[in-house]
Image (tube, helix red, strand yellow):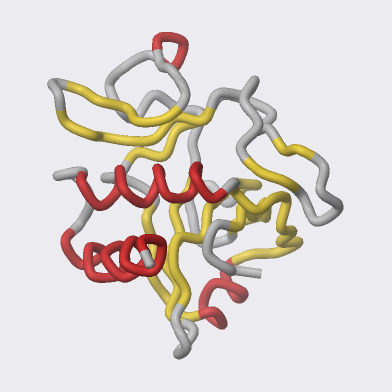
Length: 153
């Protein structure tokens, strides 16, 4: 669990209120530092989700998030079965991004399950959008840069 590109579904204890959430692992290094981002079905990008198309979310010509259309396959589960999110959801780049150690993440969740590994292009598009977004906190940029360098090799 917590391999780059994995989508995890878990009961997250350290959010208010604690609840089941999907999150995507963006980065993990040899020291087990991890960067993840939560999905949300709430309108946190300022555009109604019904008006969005799968992929980059732009507002005023700036990348502000990444939208997962519930009708679009985004990856495969551990058996090779296609995975689609059960509801339309978005990753807003100014909300829900976290960094910590693997043990910190494991202590903050219960019943965590990897539900899919994103398709390589999907993962690349998500990381690229986060990297290019002015809303992504600068402390995450070096990790995103490392991921993009690895992808480009």
